[in-house]
Image (cartoon, rainbow, N blue to C red):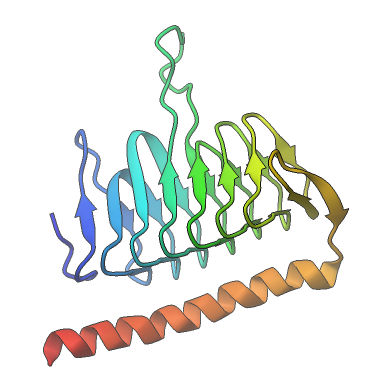
Amino acid sequence: MNDPRFPGATIMSFDGKVPQIHDSAFIAPGARIIGDVTIGAEASIWYNCVLRGDIHRIEVGARSNVQDGTVIHVEGPRPQSAKPTDGCPTIIGDDCLIGHMAIVHGATVEDGGFVGMGAVAMDDCRIGSGAMLGAGALLSPGKCIPAGEIWVGRPAKFLRSQDAGQIAKIRLQTDRYCQVARMHLAEIHAASKG
């Protein structure tokens, strides 16, 4: 199914679950949003991203951006699980930055968290509020980056803590992405009328 609000994007139900996308969100052409996915106000999902909520849910909070080519997926309940709620959803809080070509798989990124370009966050990971997983880093299953820390490398390890000014820059970047998303949306609508 296609959503006329987001021309060129694929918005598809799966197993009876339809993506829930706020009217003020930006979904770029070429993006694929599938199944149990919720996208908040002023969030932006950029060109050629895939968010596949087929075996668990995905949530992207308000003003967060998922940049070009990123893949977001989930881990479903294991067959031996006693509870159908087990497994690993992907939860991205408010005001988060998910860099180009990142992979976030069954992980949580708390409000104001940052996942660098080409980084990988695996099942049951947590990136704390204002924390950063550096570009190209690999956060292995079950690892937690505490609030305000920067981790880098493969596997990712603690580098240093950020100060309040550095954490505030993440919010400035999310504000910038909201503005740029509005510009892209205007261009897309103008092109579709022309």
